[in-house]
Length: 326
Ligand code: SAM
Ligand code: SF4
Image (tube, rainbow, N blue to C red):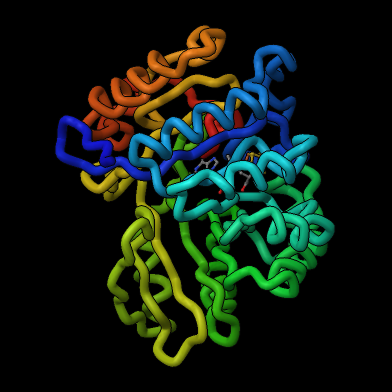
């Protein structure tokens, strides 16, 4: 079965936010004081998430990314992941984490059936890392990356949100990580989801990022694989790993967007920047899954053609990335 939206895009990727809680407060994602937490009753239960995920897979979803907030802080996650991994027809189960708890959890995650990990890492300098994340410990994340390798995960993808004047002086250091290790380092354009004061000055377009790296390391374009996501990938000649660039602002990838999202509160959204979504909780009170299936199909049909963040940032309200799942 296939889910096709009204623009002819095949939707086969679900991002599932399992919690709005996080053990960090990254400056681009949350205000310093954090965001109001969902009450436990407002968060979707694992049982309900499982129902949504299995219906979505039966309709045509092939890849699920578990995200958050920080997914590894939610209790009972490993058992839930094990159940997700066993859904017939699911081809890929992957997870995005800040890596702070990964050194202890890498092996159990692998055993639960997670196939790949994306790790958010915005600085290789301990003080800058702690400043951006408001309290994170770089050494723990690096230990987590090593633990993922030891646990048998394929080489991790490292996601760096590039912010001018904050971490743009580390672009070459991040690119150099790929020289001897088979990591994929992905540079992500900073999105003004919080619209905090002075955000404009932090934005750095993907083209400029590539040019800065390209001046030092000649970059060879790579062809994308199916379900590879929105990154344009390159390789430094002779490097073990790869470099990706993700440009949600300067070169929105909406034309090839293949994803839908379920937030930690159980709201189904067709676009990260959609003004609203459908609350699945009332539908899940019904033991029959018919309405749930119709709603999943409906959100795909009504998926917007594109977002308008670049040309008119006033058109979208602030976006709580930690609730929606990035
Ligand atoms: N806590 C996990 C983590 O940080 O990897 C998963 C959730 S986090 C919301 C998912 C992704 O969203 C992270 O890679 C993060 O860098 C990205 N993100 C959050 N806010 C962003 C922003 N304003 N611009 C670009 N990326 C952002
Ligand atoms: Fe937490 Fe991830 Fe948001 Fe950072 S980006 S505050 S780690 S949810």
